[in-house]
Figure 1 (cartoon, one colour):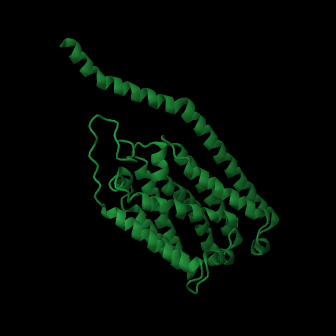
Figure 2 (cartoon, rainbow, N blue to C red; figure 1 turned 90 degrees about the vertical axis):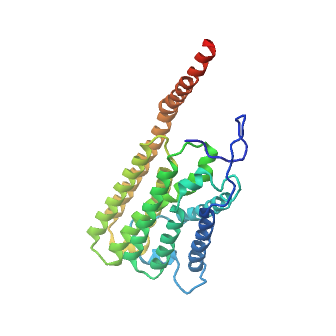
Figure 3 (cartoon, one colour; figure 1 turned 135 degrees about the horizontal axis):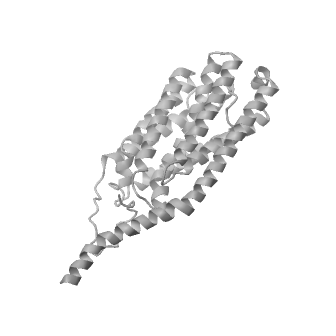
Length: 306
């Protein structure tokens, strides 16, 4: 695989021909972004008479709902995706591998996200959970697809970054949405504690699954840590409905579990970063150099024999 083309220049003696024609994905991605933004903001800004996500979240507060400030990450996600949508219109980028690897994943994500926004606003919680897992599955597929080509840091920031950021957040949001269901159906406190505990275990396991790859995408486990910090902060001063239902021991138990998750994933991130720098990166560079040397050997031998 090759690096992402970020300009029309080439270091080779004969410049590569770049297809600057419009790709249908360019237009579809743009339309998807606009439609998703309209659906999201029409509810969040009160353009239509429906409660926004914050109001619904407060109504069905779970013991693992993050602190309100944590949701500001959506501003970063939307702005980064806007940059991504605009960037893919540049002539040198219209048919780049970043666009082709993203495939139809982004339009599918926006359809699912619009469906989630509407169903959540109308408090159809089982349907919102279906849409949420649809978003998650599609984003994981997109992140894995974008992970399969070699890219520079610039290429990562331009193409994979927007997807990785949202993937990490949707992993956490899926855990919260899963916990909303027993709250909505008024399940017992025991069931809510069990679901929240399992959700934390799944998030930690997911973070380490992502850390096990090379090249590694640190954005996803870092966003999971961000979400868990938000949960921990929220449990410092829980809303009244949480205090009314759960005992101090139960709240503290979940809080300690969240803190343990933050520490474990954080330690995993640091350990993986050191392992990459000390072991995996040097080994990959050495292997690439050996491969390059082997490819150049036949031509050198040919010149000597001549």
